[in-house]
Amino acid sequence: MRAFEANFDGLVGPTHNYAGLSFGNVASMGNEAAPSNPKEAAKQGLQKMKALADLGLYQGVLAPQERPDVHTLRKLGFSGSDAEVLAQAARQAPKVLAAVSSASSMWTANAATVSPSADTADGRVHFTPANLVNKFHRSTEHPVTGRILQAMFTDERHFAHHPALPSVDHFGDEGAANHTRFAQQYGDAGVEFFVFGKYAFDSRQPAPQRFPARHTFEASQAVARLHGLNPAKVVYAQQNPAVIDAGVFHNDVIAVGNLNVSFYHQEAFLNTAEVNAQLRAAMGEGEFHFVEVPTAEVPVLDAVKSYLFNSQLIALPDGGMAIVVPEECRKTASVWAYLNKLVTLGTPIREVKVFNLTQSMSNGGGPACLRLRVVLNEAEQAAVNPAVWMNDGLFSRLNGWVDRHYRDRLVEADLADPQLLLESRTALDELTGILALGAVYPFQR
Image (cartoon, rainbow, N blue to C red; front, side, top):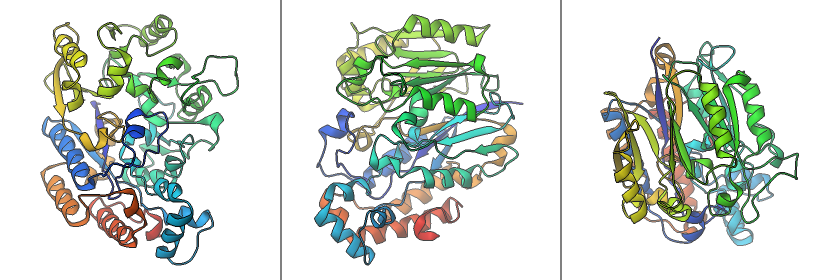
């Protein structure tokens, strides 16, 4: 049965703002307190989704979280009406209010780890929402993320859903931002590549010193077990601690892969030669393209600034691959020179597609952050909630929805405005109808 990769992009939420919440994410830290434009952010994301759908790719939409998250504030001791809870939090703990107002669920690469049916013991697609325990503002996402995924992938004959791993640092899980799958064809039994920042139970191993290693080896092992993966088809690799300290908070900031192509920076991993040998052995017969970008051509800081590797490698319907990059790549001389060279190297990557994602980039997320990859065969695709697939009608409907509900300017002080909460809930209530999700948000239950 034919199989293909579908991308499910996160729809930017109404409270998109720059609160500088993500320590270790250089762009997020650098733009703290700048005004944001939620309407523009949402429309930029929709434009990318529609463009990829127009290429003939399977493109879906993943709904945002309910924000501000008044329910978490109540768990933290704030009380009274919703307006009073927001006012108390703004006075007593403004950074907590900013955290529970984050629209970071737009970066759905962190939503979950997904293993396709060709790789799993029971022949189903498996989903494990990421606990994102390293950052408070993201650690509250996984219950709603799990409900949204279950509303999109409902048929138990085809889909299996697991709860998030225990919410402790030892099992810190950042989802698909640290996971890549390689295969000759999407329907083949593939090699699942888990990248981690540290060993939680072995402090003797190398670890970053400046910024946190968010994802652990032990978390990767746990997800592989939960998904019933063949150990011979699983490869683990540790991120280079030095690049984490340079701002590479996830592997998808320094490496990306698709089918039989691994595109990575020279300094991405510890023991790169050993990692590549394991990948080649696990893949077995057939070509495997390792495209290593030298530090001499693209310094790590240029890679981080431009998000060269936070790109999408997409298989084009007529053959070959394109790399989807943000506009910032064109503005970074070393990166743009390399991309122009890349398409001449004889690898499957033959085309560069540039998108304006300034609002997302300013908060530390590029094209790869915005999408969750799900490999599906034809029967599984037919079982997906049909309302979430991007097409002309949904594109028009969601743009109209954004126009009705989103502000075009937001600063941190606005997060205490009860009207913003009302606007957000009204928007999300309508969105669950558009996407046929049912009651996935706490305010609906």
